Image (cartoon, rainbow, N blue to C red):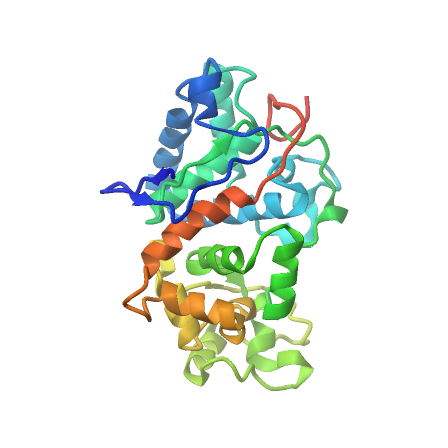
Length: 326
């Protein structure tokens, strides 16, 4: 069983972590000439995070957008007129500049050794730790994918039902525990009002608000997200809201995301849907510390360490520049 460092006494993973095929724990330290790769990456992430704490949410979304399409192969980083980053679902992705900066450093220190896919995974892990999450162990040795096509991007709607969401996660070889845990990344970050207006004004084309949302919270959101001119959700200027008003600009991970779901104050429909499946409802209550005899938010931290390692699959090369194949 691997220890998950938390900057204090340490948190242990709840169960043994199965090693992904061909990846190794402490791959760079034990099996390459770049023994301090993880330390170099951590240093760059810390420098960036000290100036811009939004980077944690940006990297989490960037990693999700990468791993849930063709596996964790850094295909999301490739430039091109029809690359994955041009897909509508990826319109607001960020964090590319930090990955470019880290890659430049790594190519100076250890040319041709550290993949962009590993950089994205390790940088996200370190940013999550800085924001209050666990510094979970990662198996490394990934390779960078050779192709990136917008047509392969199948990321689901933010208003997807719990049943459809679980089916999507299962199609990626993840389970209900992974889904409930990984959605907790919505504890930080922002979203466009276009992802919320259906819940506020025209839920399931009924012309009425989502009945699962607290009326008081809906009234608050309407102040920032006015009714669009047409109910397609598009607006000339698309304002945004925090995914979790409790964390807001602090960008600190915590269990208020799960507490808000219990209070019917989730911003996104997919997050509120956690209450409408027996398994996700129980896990939501546990992560929100609703059951004092269970692990609570520490349980979420341990589960995150496992789920982040289960989003994987990569083949290819080690790019010299993360935006282009060699």
